[in-house]
Length: 543
Image (cartoon, rainbow, N blue to C red; front, side):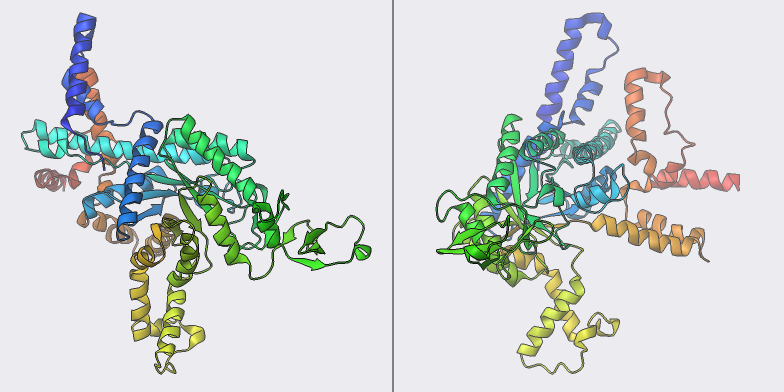
């Protein structure tokens, strides 16, 4: 990750000094050190600056993974800028670096939480503008996290603390976003226009799926309809042209296939010669042999292997794929995408099973050896039950006596401390490491974690606060934990930019500035030990 470096501050300092010399007395009130400090606290001027910077990071990480699969990357889905900000602050606090930690922007969460229509299902019904809007919002909050942390460091430096090295080697909170463009929200021109807005907002990686735009479904629901390869390649091209036009030469395209769970197609592509992509796609379409005299009025017919066949068409006009063709379709989708400009793959799967994922990836790698995945560690999976079932089968194959377990009730808490469940939890713990090593998974993400954590935490707080615990439920379950775990937003005024604003007002108005951070600011109760003692003294006087 990018460090601040003295050159940024010194360059800005010299620039302001030169401007003061150029414009003379009218600039007397401008302090070069203050202006340079503000420049240093805002390293990224535009979303394009961010997209170029983060794309380079992803490219470096992809190369590192190709060299060593233990160098996989991770992200969590965030539906608000504040959520993303607190995530990256926590990453820096707990892990000391943001390296290989990204952000994910989920179309599902945009639909469910960000649409002006209110909560919507994941069917591309939300406003297109909500997606680039959320990207811009996330990066606004991350830039603010930079400014707040650096402002604190500059304050400490002014107070005589030796923090120059921390300033010089400051690591930004800005990290790559993998952003979901769904199925492109229309034709390839619509995809291009939206991709441009997403890139301009800061997205360096755009994930697009091969479903029909106006029939798009969540990857973990039924009723998915895929498009022929030619249609999908056109959208891959549209995204690449958008990256090139905006100067993000390293932009990353993540091509998602939903073919594993999709049994329908809307279109029958036109084959130009035997064995071409359209021909391969048509070969997957389910059909029944028919004699020409038995064909019905307005039937659609194909010639296949010298015979006339009628594609199976549903009442809604959609065509059905052959049963059991899904894995072959996934492999062809992935190979075709990589051969036509995609950088990474995304395969939606019904369960999180490393062996099943590896089976598909190994087939893809027979054609494209460095193929690698972005994989959805989805909350739509029942992880506990899936892995308990996997371990049950393994233990059975090992000859273990499994009569103590009810196969139909493995979620029961009575099994939580059993050998089966210990082994299942260990497999869940190592799933990302195992998937990176055995199944070509470069990036692991959870699409909807903050959707679920918000719901869970509100459930727990509501139970106590509106019950017998009252205010103690908040104090014990929230504030006391924030204080003891040093969660940044316990001082919510500071986190919202109050201290930063005070310093800016001092730059702008000098001693006349009306500041919020005085003795009567109750946030002092959460400050340093000296501030705490002052607050306690004041409280005792009031008492």
